Length: 159
Image (cartoon, rainbow, N blue to C red; front, side):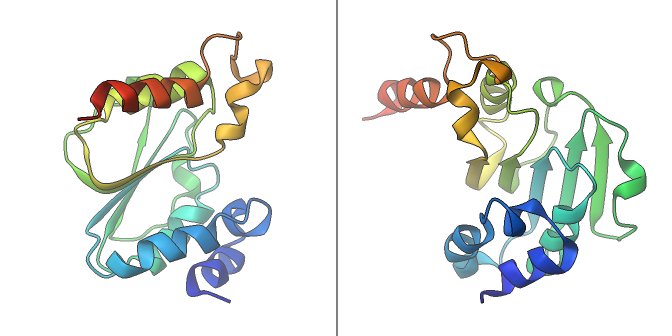
């Protein structure tokens, strides 16, 4: 088992346990693991994945934002930061190596956050749970899928 999945299991994050994202994350992030200096995770819930990222990226400051006041769940770690705010209102004051959007999963929030942080990431921007893109429970109205939004963004920015 890869080291990120083991850390995800250790800290009890759904990224390892139910979603199984950690295997793919490890495959993509492993080549730059020790070079990453800053990570932003949007939507930190109980801070489990923040703990995982702190261990996995030993040279990175790991920041988290959440609409809820979850500061008490955040690890008391010198490399951990937390800010309470709605994800679509967040404006980065720095450039992050990696941004992971695991926030509300609402179409509008995903799209506004992507646009707001477009100039704020260096290596990877990850939008988790895109399966919500076709769900009315997450704001899909038949015309505003985040998957379609990203396809259109890519089409407009090619070449």
